Length: 114
Picture 1 (tube, rainbow, N blue to C red):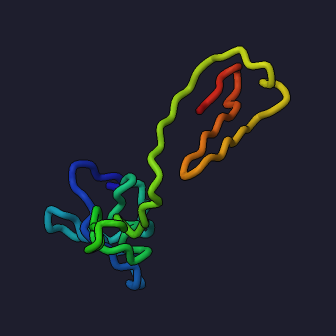
Picture 2 (picture 1 turned 60 degrees about the vertical axis):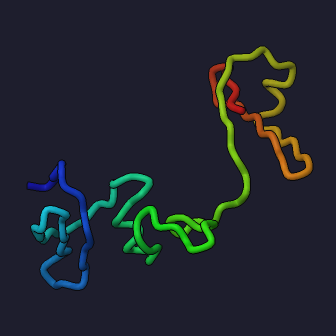
């Protein structure tokens, strides 16, 4: 088997000569030539690879989650088809204000992402 669904990676060890040893959450261990970390935004594989700490782990002060510090920004995004006067002249706009900014960009086919 080269793809296994329904069980998560708990940890891995890539120091073995015979390949990557993968410890799964059901208690089994598998050894393979390659481990692809396609396990999403809260990746256990990436967390171990970059020593980020426990998956979804939060620092004691609450400002760092999964190794990423909170920037203080909140993002709202959307996409629309709008007739804009500068659509063909400007592909990317940034409007900067005190502790806020707004970005508008051309995403093709007359669509604008904001």
